[in-house]
Length: 332
Image (tube, rainbow, N blue to C red; front, side, top):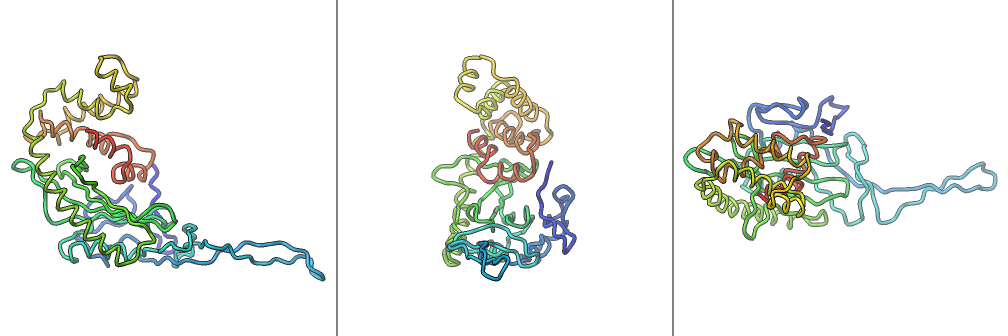
């Protein structure tokens, strides 16, 4: 599985760090204690700046007395983004594009909780450093039943290549199996997007909005998950719920409801998720085994622990940025 983690030839290190967990594909740095934002920036190899430079093309013209005359022509309304430590071109952007420096992304997180209590757990850069990501853990938990704890994470990703907005998302993660649990919620999305044309004041305002969203979502999720943990579900119902959640289209749903056969690929996918639900040790808790909460965990567990992705970036996008895994778990 490809990783696409940035490798800095100047430092000889991959741009990724993780706290206590094995680094991504064994690449990057592992640290034993939660770093502050300045330390995390260095551990992740994100301590570089990005600038904009003018772009030129060349016009060939035959001049008198000269064999060949090359004239620089500036390309209007567009500039290249360059990382200053390696001079690599990261992308081409419009004139109104505002660079969000890597350090600004961490400042954004610090401002959410006043710099206290937030724990930077992973961060890194992909490609040539054109996309960065940060995950940070909040100090409080969502509690399901007596001892099933769900940690609360904030995830941020931004790019320097002109593609995509700054995205900040709230993501609850069940400790026992490390599954993200992005359930569908009333009147709430778990993420906000900020355009690169937004100024620093607007971004700071959005930081507080993220915290407000997180607080409201955590209350809703605790209520929902505890209700689901009290609803018994027999094995056949678990399998049916998995099939419905994983169904890619209406035709598949109709076949499920009528008892007709679906494709071998779909059946294999459902069987893998069902096997995870029935036999994985992380499902053997009072809150999950034989409950609706357990059936939901089976779907999230399949996408994060069983399904094979073409590369790690695809998996990251699928789980965090509204990809297939999020769509299916929302459907669940």
